[in-house]
Image (cartoon, rainbow, N blue to C red):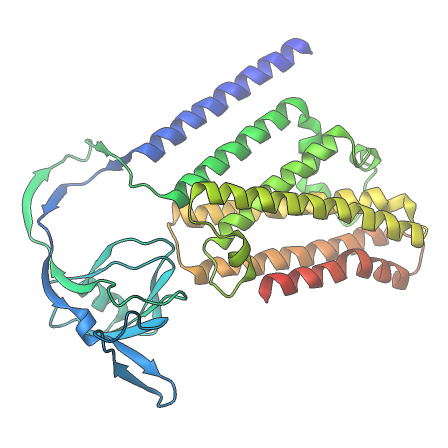
Length: 399
């Protein structure tokens, strides 16, 4: 047994550090695989689109020109018309500030969580939106400065070099606090999972048994007979708090401003991200401890001590499974599909709430097979332990 544990630990350690080395290489370099590389001269300005800026006058229900000489900002939104036919051979250059959203003909064009510089070929925009006249709108909840760059420019290529498909070159990836925080957080979570797998492998796999989690009948499992505050279970609760808080901090960075999560957990630097992550983890850990004591108290009131462990461990197990699934989906949206629109990420909030509702429904059927009381007693019990807390969470998240 000692030899097997040592051997298993060595294998897991090698796999983990190999994966760590791979992630480091992927983050510090990017592969350029192309038939042609074009080096461009500084952009030649064809037109400064700020001259055409419009703002919406609500009392007149009309768009009026912006007086740039008298204003330092133009409110939270500005619009202008981009002639796709006239400027089809040029690019649209913009330098949006943090949390700026671009719209084209009423549809979302792009969202930028950080200050950056971006340009689009105007002919491509016209083809994408099926119109030669593009009505561009820019929205930022923190107001738009009058000095924000919106120009029609021309890039003149000055050098070409052929690179074969089998060749590549490495270049330094631009610094991104958001991406760096997400990757560092992932490395930390994977490292914690490796440690848990080395010391409490059976307990970890017991919590991630999907068939048992979604079974409507509670089985006689060793997990339900264990002490809720044993060393292994405390570490599992901490692990779940770590993963769920990481998901919340990641999600809050991309959500629209109207969500309260953005106010508490959004971040601008790596240090602030880890601080918010720690704060969220402690809040979730305290909530889970209070969750057990509320279940314990209601079980005493309803004289149902025989299923308090089943209720609590089933709650943790279902929460861990749907948190893992949503976290993988969030990481795929960000790292694989490179989606940054807040309107896409807000759907994950609705999926999270739907998973919570499904968890409550599954708990009802699980406990119904154990309880000897009437269904009405079980429903009132779940109102105190599940439904009312869930209503409060929904209200806090959505409003």
